[in-house]
Amino acid sequence: MKLKLTKIAEEIVFFGVLAILLCFFLFLFVWMILSSFKTTVQITAYPPQWLFTPTIQNYIDVFTKKPFLEYLANSTIIAVAAVAIGLLFGLPAAYSLARFKQAGVGFVILLVRILPGIVFLVPLFIIYRRLGLINTYTGIIATHIIIVLPTIIWIMAGFFEDVPRELEDAAMIDGCSRISAFFRIILPLSRPGIVAVVILSFIASWNNFIFVLILGGSHTITLPMAVYSFMSFEDVNWGGLNAAATLITLPILLLSLLVQKQLARGLTMGAVKG
Image 1 (cartoon, helix red, strand yellow):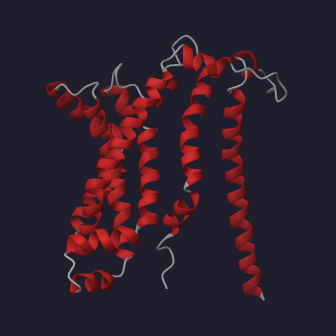
Image 2 (spheres, rainbow, N blue to C red):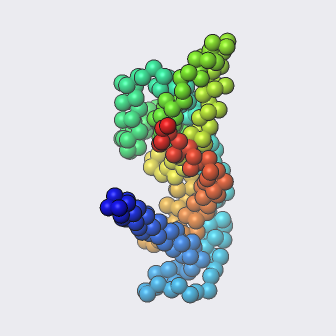
Image 3 (cartoon, one colour):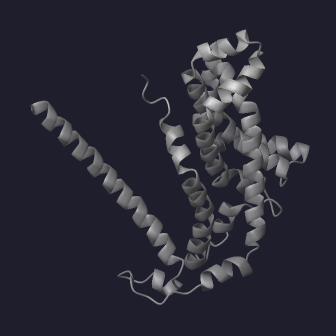
């Protein structure tokens, strides 16, 4: 009886903390959306105005005063290319890490993953300036791969470790090569994990700001830079900033909703082993 009460108390505390955190983040999200339909006077009013006449002028300003569609295209091209290249090299690397237990390589990958992106900026800027890669798609995509690739390798290595080696051995006995077994057995069984890592990598690339700020330029401005452009030393266009932030958030939100089942399955796969 005491054990059951303890378990109930733990669940109440867990879900209580979870509800508080969820309410906090939902409040920020709702506040951002509401502010995108307010004027600057309404946004900065105190106490906050919950009842107001909405305006779409902020969204009009986003598309008319800034080449927002160009920024959207830049972000999409860079994120898709970075994730695709990351998967091309990351999945085989993760498989090798999982099957051959390369602890040293795993440590280096983990180190790269946890290091802040600003660590790479100075050497990259020097290299890019000499190679003429500043303000180019190639240069920005390469920097995003630095973020995406370690994430893909480290997460997918765990998924590949959960795939029974016996299935792969059986496929090789039936005539498959190791490469064929990888594509026919390992990858299909790891599909939820691949979906999860694609979403997480895409979000990381989509939201990246620092690399484009330093190594980008007028031809490679992405959506986070579009939000930054609504801020200046003299003034902050709060309405335009919130409208741009809402537009940036919507594609990721819709993408996550479309694949939420596989995303949830991928994030929890391997958490419980029979």
